[in-house]
Length: 191
Image (cartoon, rainbow, N blue to C red; front, side, top):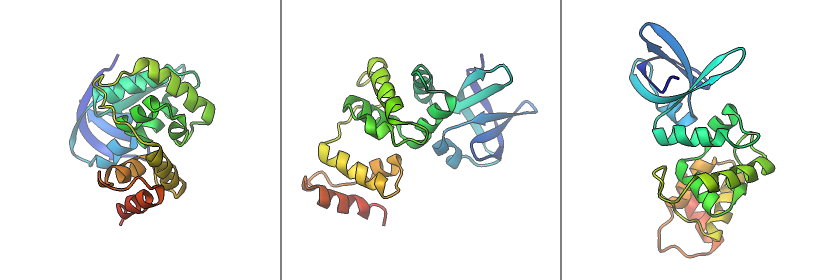
């Protein structure tokens, strides 16, 4: 119904942006990375998805069409509603989601707030059928078993999946395959 939106950000809330379009302030729920980049008074263009409920019309906004497409795919998973789907996009990058799906590692998805082990398994299974390597959402990159352990250790220390992924990507290509050494190098990213 409402596919895109262009307007001025008049207010930034905890989970949403108020975007003024033609004199009307629209509350648009957006993923956390988009919200943190937003500045009051700046113009914004976003791809949107309208959820129609019996008692409300709820608008969700995304920076790219790929994010919106992934949001729609996530809504097709049994037990995943808009709040959980937006939480996934707030916590993980498209790249990280694809790595988890194609590496058959649903535990990474279960680290998203609001996603349990069973839901993560359902998501991984559903997304594997819907996503294809190189489908335009993001490039496929594999993650080694060692880096999976490093990812688990970093998230156990309180870092988000996105932060942990960034730290792992900062590890030099010629670094040893030892988990302890790779964890030490990844922790250096946060200093």
